[in-house]
Image 1 (cartoon, helix red, strand yellow):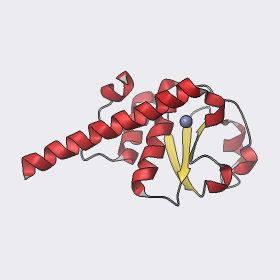
Image 2 (cartoon, rainbow, N blue to C red):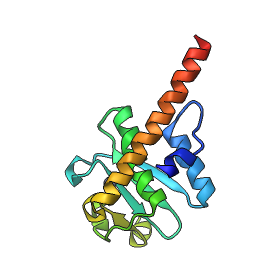
Image 3 (cartoon, rainbow, N blue to C red):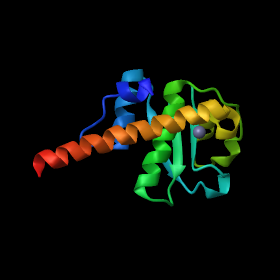
Image 4 (cartoon, rainbow, N blue to C red):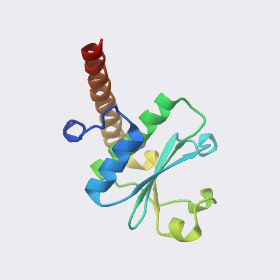
Length: 141
Ligand SMILES: [Zn+2]
């Protein structure tokens, strides 16, 4: 929760802009890739490379859901959760070079505590974002 409170949120809130800001702070690019994830099981996946993080998220869902998925993955990244290594073959669109150096961080390998942390992070950021949005709305209105 502290992590979510410390983040400087973009105004107006935009999850892509937030990821760009976090990436700049950490000195590690975060690439967001929309994919049809349904066949893979989870709605989102974090691939940790040597020099960058890649977040894949379900492309066939609402913008709000995508925002939540990306924030959940960002929660895993910022908490430094360790998952297990798997299946680069599922990502034929990424170059072989990229995939070889990446670990797929899968939710079932994180454990319950990490899942709760990532989920709490996503909700805390969204709550802050909507409060800020609401405040601006009431100032303007
Ligand atoms: Zn997760």
